[in-house]
Amino acid sequence: MPFLYATAAFGIALTGGGAISLDGLLGLNFLAEPYVVTALLVLAVGGAAATLSMRHGSASIPSKS
Image 1 (cartoon, helix red, strand yellow):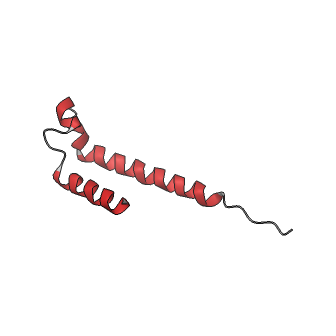
Image 2 (cartoon, one colour):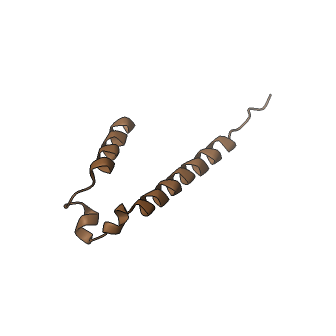
C-alpha cells in the first residue's frame, strides 16, 4: 500500500494538482514556486531524519535474569 501512495504522490508532483485542486481553488499558487517546494522537501527530510534517529536511539537492551 505505501508503494501505491508513493506512486500517486509522484504522479501528482510531476503533473500538478490542476485547476480543481484545493490550492488552485483558494488561489495559493505560490506553493508551486521552486523555493517553497525546496524548503518543504528539506523540512520533510529533516523531520524524517529526526524521527528515525529517535526511533533507533530508544532500543532497549534485555537484561540477564
